[in-house]
Image 1 (cartoon, helix red, strand yellow):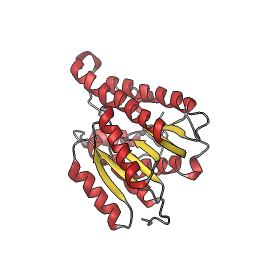
Image 2 (cartoon, rainbow, N blue to C red):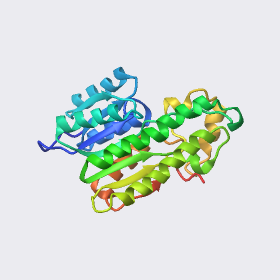
Image 3 (cartoon, rainbow, N blue to C red):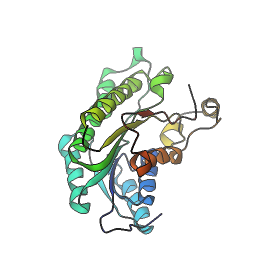
Length: 249
């Protein structure tokens, strides 16, 4: 991990930064030289552990809790990042929920809760990002390759992520002239604790065999894609959905 080479480092805010893919993204962006606001919903201890890792390696970070669907709470996290570091250059919205159920059996209260986090939450975070990102900045949302794969049991989740993909392109066009990119990363099956929970070895092996590369993705794979999108090499990628899934079709 590199230390900051300037008194005014680039600044990233990552929602869902305390675990899984989001946790690895915070580590990667800190290694890239960003000061990082580690957003979390409920697991303060895990978020603070990430902060300690980053600081021990010479980086700058702080943890900030918020319900992504609550405008005032999200705005407060942006306020903290701006107060500490002077502005925000990258927003990575990795927070989300993934309850699974056949469409015919899904409790509609669960549907409402899912949509509140995955759709309203994305809208709230994106709205703050659109207002606050500095020129040269980048917003990265998260969808899922399940939108195209359409596995049974993922109906509500896939629908929520389809909304994220639509929002991404609209916002990229609305930010014309701002020098801010807006993209979405759509991972395939990725070996996180959340993904592996409840799956037997046969199911995991079957999913791992689907990509031509014949393995599950890793959080590091996805974090590298985000690193590209928010870095100088990714400035000409805008309004896109990058399906980081090893070639599953």
